[in-house]
Length: 203
Image (tube, rainbow, N blue to C red; front, side, top):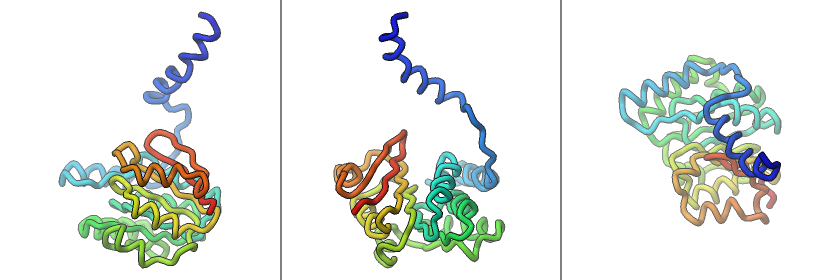
């Protein structure tokens, strides 16, 4: 096959292989919480989804040496636990609007002895984010349904310059205000992959 055709089809082949095969398996210290989230969702037909793999947000908070982390979308606490575990000196504030999920997340966090470092804040993201101190967070992780322009603007306000936003669920169709904000090169250094964007605050 000519090299030009190889180069043309290689990205497609790599993506197809990656979808069914993982070159590296990473141990998950909170696999039990991931499994509990799946069981709960099946039983209650609710919106409790744990982010695909806690290793991504965990690796990011460890890399930046995060001290303060804010999360939107707690579910049962899977990624909050993963991030707190990966950044031992960090405090995680995680927002959840479903009262039942707030209770279950607190139970999981307590069972894993992380309740002294993870706060579950009940309420909507739009309401709770406004109460938090601006410019004081190292990492923000959005893992709610689909982000709104208001939520993205608040997360931008909360992050320090150089802070990192992990924006998940972008395949669910955020509106133009979200995509234009995250793609604004005067505000963010952004890399998009799959359903997620990794954005570093510039200004």
